[in-house]
Length: 337
Image (cartoon, rainbow, N blue to C red; front, side, top):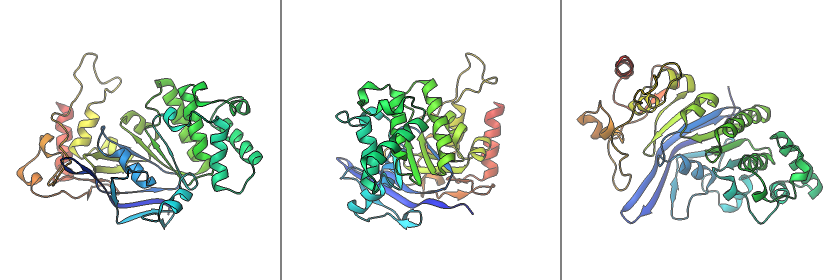
């Protein structure tokens, strides 16, 4: 049995706003095993980034985080206090943010920032920390690594800054890395290089990886398992092959319809789209969050909350009242149309 690195059960994030309480994350549950890549995918505002910040305990002060279980390597990290949590962040788990220019301190050199991560959590001297920094900069593909240490973030390109962030995250050899859309600010060529680099490093260091993205093309290339989020909830979860070959929830089906398929989608043909808008998550919420946009919704969908149920294949779950047979038939009808 694979070693469980992260276990999250019934995670909720509520934020007070002028109109009431914003239920940003609503009862999310998932896990990550050692050596596994879990991709959390969904449109902007669905709660992906807040989920990652909740795991790291980096939410805004006014946000309220609750969970039935939040464990790292079998140890509860729920409500352990900022001092103990700061000992874990950067040591046993790390995070790679979207924009490295805002994550790196412009006033300190690359070397100082890399060394600080190791000096904070390990009993090593400055020379040992510097050697570790050079080793990891070379590992992430930065040439003449030692000469980069005196440089400042503004002297590096976006791709190099992101590689520095990855090296910094690896300084203490964490068990878990959370990458929050790490390729958003980079051009397509550099995006592919960074994704390939993350996959190689994960295999080499045998870490768990949570990759947060809205790009299903990225998911298809690197994911072992996929969790699809919509309006603060996971609406479908399963192995990447299961989700891509047998999408069950109507929202997942709609997302995949929006992607052009080389060799199948004709030039000039209309791409799929999902009508309507995301519902407000402020106040009392009831029923399926996707009901107002779903072509198969009935009155029962809005009556009560819909639980995440088990599909036909092992480990494949979806949040819908339709049976797996009905969902498969709906998908077949869409494809033939």
